[in-house]
Image (cartoon, rainbow, N blue to C red; front, side):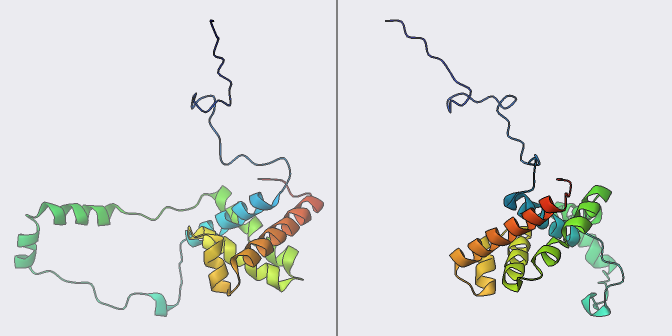
Length: 176
C-alpha cells in the first residue's frame, strides 16, 4: 500500500514565503468598503506625521531648557546609560511623509464629507473609526467615543464605507 502524499498549494503544512506570500497593500480592481477604510486611516496617519510649523504658542513648551553645571555633567558623562539615552535623543528624527503619501492624503481626506455629507450619522462614525484605526485602536474604541453600541457603530461604518466606495466607482476615481 504505497500512498502518495500530494501537497496542495493551500495545504497548511507547507509554507513557502516566496510562493505563498500575501501582499497586504494590493489594491483591488474596484473600490470596496474595506479598502476605502484602509485609505482613510492611511490619510489620517499621514496627516499626523506632517510637520506642524506655525502652530499656536499654546502648544509649545514654555519651560526653559535645563542648564547643567560642569560638576553635574562630569558625573553623568561616565554613566553609559546616560550616554546611550543622550545619543538616542540627539539622533531621533520624525519621519516625513513622501509626496505620494501626501497626494493620497489630500485625495482621501475629503471623501467622507463629499460622499457622506447628507448623512451626518454615517459621516461621524466613519471619521471616528478611521481616527481610531490611525491610533491602532479598533472600532469598539470608536463606538465608546461615539456613545454607540459596538454593532451599530460597525454597521454604520460599513454602510458609510460602502457609500463612499460606490461614489468613487461612480466618479471613476482611480484605485490606489
